[in-house]
Length: 168
Image (cartoon, rainbow, N blue to C red; front, side, top):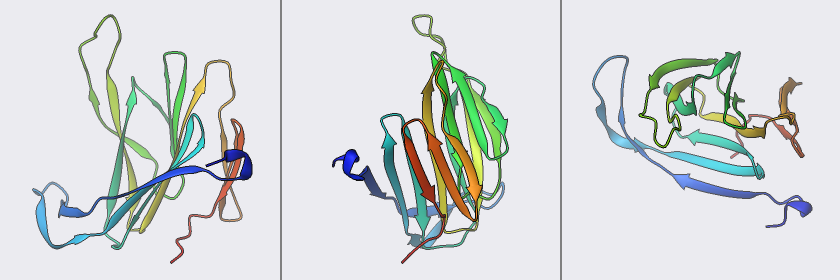
């Protein structure tokens, strides 16, 4: 795959859902599994578009772990850790990120491995999408804007438009 010719590296994983949870209830088995695909597209060496699709319109929550204690800003989260910033932008999820818990790990060789679990409420939409990008210290990270129903991702060596509409 040659990015200079507009081709992007990607991978698709099929991950059927066999159990569901409703509120605080225990997980219940489904009569038939929900079809779920996760597609990861490498936009640059340090930026990825993650798209989840499903054949069902049930409530979904997508979890990510970020190092340290991230900052929340609308539909995005930023974690300044080490020599840069890791950012996650919810592109097609309906709600902002919420802190779902902190996971402290014992420092190993003086390195803090603590993470914070973030939950993005994706609602009942059969598609959710996220931009995950690492920006080295001193560089400008991607800018994410919504214009005329499309997400515009600019900076960090790429310029991408994503509508959030599902085809097929």
